[in-house]
Length: 404
Ligand code: FAD
Ligand code: NAD
Image (cartoon, rainbow, N blue to C red; front, side, top):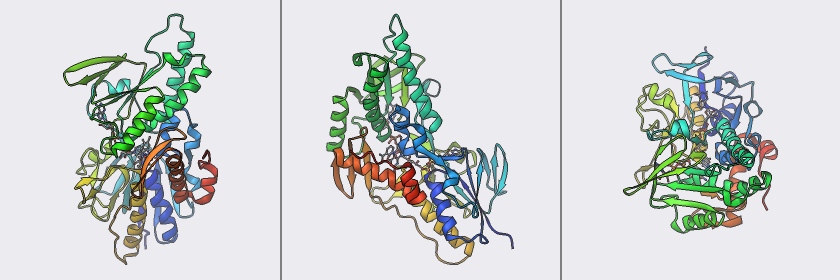
């Protein structure tokens, strides 16, 4: 009898968690498992703000996929997915096609620009290793160029961060650490640098605990970050951004604009004809696409409703990894044709948001934490993700131990 073909798209948190759990639960003869990913490495999306600011080398935030998979059970294919043909159960790659019996879609998120003019052309986004490396290089280059300019371009060292959500705030925390180092390295007066965060909502970190939000904003302000709250980015141009507050429109000239104001699911979701909201499919309780018993969608391209507040859970690595575990259990049941499918219920431990290397804010198991305690917890969360996928050896290789 032919072995069922399981094809997993994406070696991020959700995809790798599914693959590493499946290689434990299924025997070699039970299924043919293929994991497809654009790169031969996994990157820690949750560390990209550090790589983007240059406070952590990008190589620290990635590892080879093959170091965590059992090649006798999982075949790894380095390839770029371009489409899904649901009727014929085929995945299209730039490199060729793959047939599946069961599909796991875990291709993560894309930057959401809400159709704002000029953003795609003139702003960076913190999305993957390539974009993080590009942001770091671009900022370094602005400092190096400023040092050589006879007539200094005033906005050369102005950095605008769009959005004070968790990504924006964590990136600002890293910039607050990195800027003094850059000033020293390139003999630049700190007063020549401006970092401005533009947030459309009436507060930074909308929806988060107000006391912790104040802590974060005060901490970052004391490190020289400027906030423009209740102000929306309307357009990005070659020379900076146009922002609006009420009726007032203003141009902020800046050589660097980083858009960190939201994400959507993969555009391949809509292209494949799945019903979706901003690229996210409202999956059933077993994590399958409605009406598609052979397609699981997990991570940032899935949408799970928090029944308590009747709103979607925010897309996080925490949820993507838990979904990977449930998805692997359910695939094992389907392959064996015995047992009960598991319903997915997120088990949220909390949220910790870093403010640079040694400070953070968070709510963990319902308790508020700040300062070095929160920062310690954030590093433990980062190490836990490594442990869950690659065990203690991966933590030793890639973990964060700079606790003090
Ligand atoms: P990802 O982990 O992003 O993986 C997607 C994979 O698919 C990648 O390997 C990618 O290369 C691959 N891929 C994409 N397109 C293709 C294609 N066409 N073909 C082949 N391969 C492809 N969440 C938390 O819970 N805690 C945090 O502290 C936290 N911090 C964050 C910090 C930052 C800066 C950012 C940007 C996000 C953070 N998040 C955090 C959110 C979290 O990173 C995401 O929710 C999580 O990465 C989603 O996991 P995923 O498996 O869906 O996708
Ligand atoms: P987000 O949607 O959480 O925040 C985006 C912010 O941008 C919002 O505050 C929004 O009001 C603002 N914004 C939107 N349009 C704007 C405009 N035109 N001008 C100015 N501001 C605008 O997005 P994110 O911060 O990228 O986070 C994405 C997901 O990743 C979330 O689910 C988040 O919880 C998760 N995440 C978690 C952590 C953590 O747990 N430490 C860190 C980073 C990201």
